[in-house]
Length: 207
Ligand SMILES: [Zn+2]
Image (cartoon, rainbow, N blue to C red; front, top):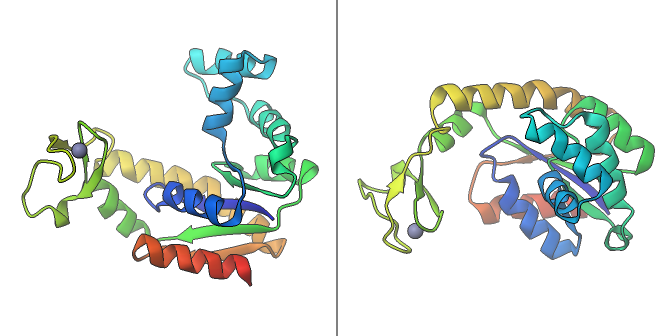
């Protein structure tokens, strides 16, 4: 099964991707990982991508699509894949359509105001990276796991988060329409515990 996972920042996409990949024995393919791998191996396309990021520019869609196309041709994808972070916009989705057939697009759906609260209330451990929500800390400022100091990331403020969500929505709305028209979009309610949301995703994939 070829699956795409969509979800706004803060929707818990990474956590769910790991679980889906384990349960359905699908390689979890994130564009960030493929970029890093290609750059590490010094492939031509990796070096091309790096030439953009080194200048602080976004890697053009054409380059990203080529990198993903190459990755999907590898042996571990022969029984399917789970794409995370790609496609990011309509152009990439249309390109993907040329070299692979998508069976299901899981969209983890969460209200924006809830995401805002999740991200702005996030506190992260300086030591181990564990994250907490300020509402459940009862005023505690140290990590339960390792005793490290908790802090609020600079990006986790209303203005930055608001912008990230706005950009995400602008880019994703056309994708949602594209996959709805193809009849492969499956919306999953993203509100609730990780386990609950995962169960909904499995139901949507199994039906
Ligand atoms: Zn910690």
